[in-house]
Image (cartoon, rainbow, N blue to C red; front, top):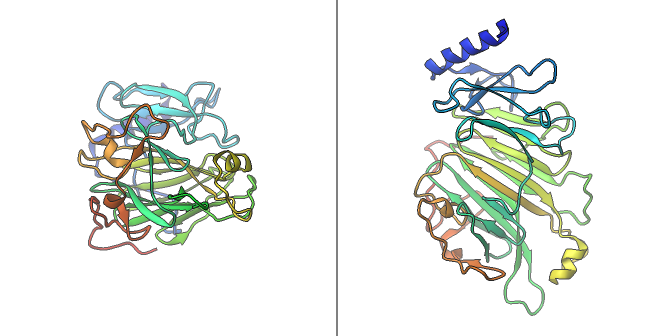
Amino acid sequence: MDRRMLCQIVALLLLSIFSQVTIAGPPVGSGKEVNAVTEDPGYVVLDPLPSTGQERAFCTMPGACYYKTLTCPTECPQRKPVKNKKQKGCYVDCNSKCEATCKWRRARCDGYGALCYDPRFVGGDGVMFYFHGAKETDFAIVSDDNLHINAHLIGTRPKGRKRDYTWVQTLSVMFDTHTLVLGAKKVSHWDEKIDALIVQWNGETINVPTDGDAEWRVNTAERSVVVERTDDFNSVRLTVSGLLQLDVKVVPIGEKENKVHNYQLPSADAFAHLETQFKFFSLSKDVEGILGKTYQPGYVSPVKRGVPMPIMGGEDKYQTPSLHSAICKKCRFQRPSSVASA
């Protein structure tokens, strides 16, 4: 073991003992120096192997991996590939499996916690279902004690149809005193090399860099927030330490898709919308929301299995007055007494 690694491990041991200590972080967000919070409390990144560049992680959570060093595979040596964002990234699991493996860093529409298409969910129980909303409405998809996520729907209703076709255009992620918005711009014609992604932090639009680490981050008093590009355009991953990881991709309704489903979309609107996949870190047993309730222990889905489009109800329980409101019949989230300014 070289001297540098030994020093790092000693520092980590001290950090685990004095768990309340904060670390001075670099200027982020507004440009002010703030106290940083570890992005992932399960491990700390060590220097990569000098010969191969494989990143390493030192596990700090009690359990089977406690104080073990995990090394990324040669097939995916980096957790966040920068030069080629379309490559698989190294996923470090210091909790259940004690391993570092290669995984795609994109939303999987058939994976657990997915929300894609018009709109189609895959719940925390693995059951797929569709949700009937209405265009220009907002619904709580997750509402818990310390986290609330709303979805804004856009859509259209062709002549003779009784319901709107709808897609998720925008997500509002609320936690502590903060709000982070991820959305798709309205575009008339789709160009995959033009960014149609909107990111806002506490009401202010932010620019996620495309070079360097290709990420925007801010460290609040409670946790770290990172938005990183997983492709050059229209694809990012949001990580809020201790709460969630969210993969988002902006996609259009293509001409072929429009014809197959008979959406009858106007030619001057590509209906750009989001494909998403959620991973939650600390939901309570009483979590609510269209998606959130599927993570309740012992939850049994009421949707009819074996049909092409199993429908989940609940429009009346989860509709909110606006994208940024946490008020609905079943909503649980409440803001702290003071609300952060931009």
